Picture 1 (tube, rainbow, N blue to C red):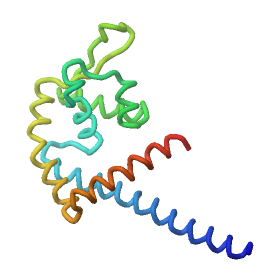
Picture 2 (picture 1 turned 180 degrees about the vertical axis):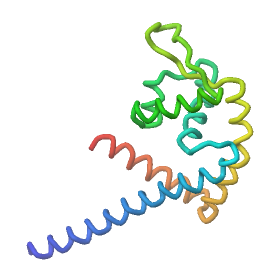
Picture 3 (picture 1 turned 90 degrees about the horizontal axis):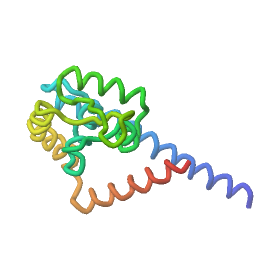
Picture 4 (picture 1 turned 90 degrees about the vertical axis):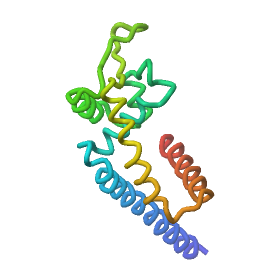
Length: 157
C-alpha cells in the first residue's frame, strides 16, 4: 500500500514538474516572440506591460502609483524602477506628484506614450492572433481561468 502511494506521488510530481517547466518555457517564449512583434518600437514585453497598465481606461487620466503598478504587474520595485526610467527617458511616461499624497508619485502616459501605445496595438493584436491561433475562444477562456486560479494560488504559497 505504501509503495503504491509513493508511486502515485512520483507520477503527480512528474506531472507538476512538467506543468511548471512548460509554464517557464511559455513565459520565456512569450517574452522573446512578443518582443519581436513590438521590436520596431524598441520596447520589451516589460515596457509593453507597463504601457498597457497605464493605458487602461480606469487609470489613463490619473495614472497609477508605483505601489499600484508593482501590485498590478506583480514585479519588484527594483525591476519596475529600471523600466520606468527607460520609459521616462523616451518621453512615454511622466512621474507627477500625487495630489492626494504629496510624498507619492503617480505614473502617467504622456501624449507621446499614448500615441506609441496606439501604434503598438496592431502588432500586439497580430502577436495575440498568431500565439493563440490553435486555441478556440472556449480554449482561451479556459486557459485564462486556469492561469488565474494558479496565480491566486501561487500568491498564497
